[in-house]
Image (tube, rainbow, N blue to C red; front, side, top):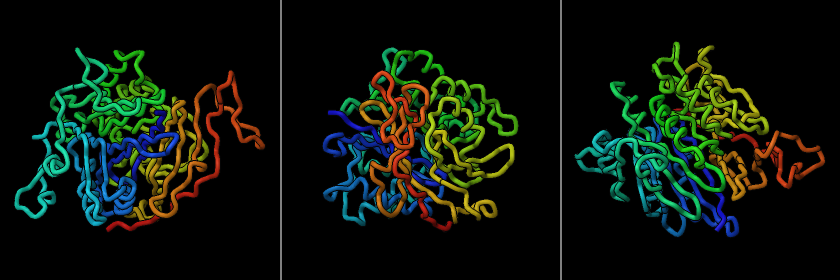
Length: 414
């Protein structure tokens, strides 16, 4: 059965969340659904996203996830899961999870009173989610690409394989946050002649292991992914081998970018003291990116020590579309437009991108931007509605269709 592979990068402010769906190209029915992280450091500004996701995954009084992945222990990767369960409960819908995986060892997860659900016993998110499904841990440096033998894929569905690139990479004597982030489960989703990579909060030490795997996995469908979630939201400090921002050593991160060569990248943005994503980090990946129509994104310019919101034709996307007037003064999000971004790979391996506002009408497929990379970018004649061809293959890098108006959803910080 031919399927489209769809990855929706969810707006979660300072956090991470990706909805992955396999869609039957004929019936348009969703035949498989996975949630890879769903958390935020600012849950109060994510209410619309939680509601949007609850409605998106619900049918016939049930909300089914065929796979749940929590990349690692930090709460900005899972804190919205209880909110999602509560939202579904208010809709009188039941959450069902078929399979669940996570990075970090279970004992490394912190316990929270907010997960006690009326009891006096604090629980970890793994203990909380066990009411839906037990989350399985991995051994150190488990991988579906290297090893004797490599780990089996997490799951396969309709010709698409969900694989662990690496997980639980040790970080030596680093700081606690570096240790937790380095152990992130790096997920590759293989199918449709291309790959999606979601690396969680991978650090320089994780990327060093990824570089080793990329060198030893030649010939396998891993490099040149159609979409890459930027490691650790595009954080500069953790991608630097010396873990400092004043004079960062980015040799390992640059090698990762130059070896992987993603066609499109996305970063979950948040105007916090962490300053993600960093312009310096995003710039590492620009050499391989495909081009599109002009679209807005945000980044922190470390050299100028300020947030900026340029427009670009490069295939780089963030969940905030502009910085808003109050970000500069009080680091508040008021006036900052936000959106989910959907990246769809069809059975031919072509990529389609769609901005999805958090409220209002759902855009149609006709509003997608189509990307292909079968040759050099060529702009079609103004009167043409079909891309130019070479040897029977389209060579257009970007074909704009009906433009999507930027989201105008606004929400003040609580």
